[in-house]
Image (tube, rainbow, N blue to C red):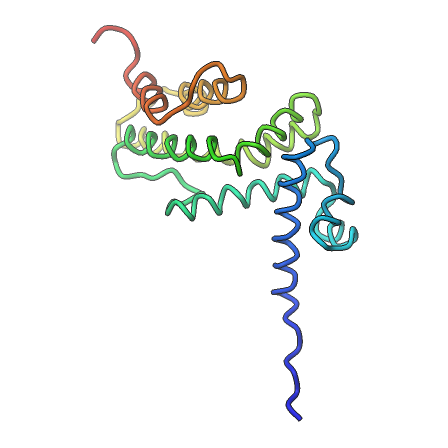
Length: 204
């Protein structure tokens, strides 16, 4: 009698984790953050509530991790590295490439709908807002800081410039347009932001 192989707990756990990610993102998109519950996520994912609490401490933890994973998956699909800003030696081209990819994410309903739900909740819920910034935004902003410091080392950016402030010249206007819908967002728009940030608006 041939003995059946033992179930692969790792594969089973990964399958459950994926189902939980998908359920969390779907629910927050459909119902909003306040009405999304751990019980609802568990039911939709087909797992027990305790499975979720074994891996995460709260629904915010689940959603933030699911959102991070979604961004990484989308970057891989686009053939990009989610954890770095490219350094080809051409700062403008590198920034434009990353911001173009950001535009593609922001305009993709899979990303945009849960992103808006989390961002909106972060404005009224201090704890969620803090976690959103700490776990999602700051690591992404640090990538820009690293690239600008690299540009400083090669003389492409003045040594006295504060990279953390400088990155806001192109990141913050995009965030405002997207969050408040003050205007359309496009590749041309972010390319222009980079040009203005790097070259200024005074006559040359």
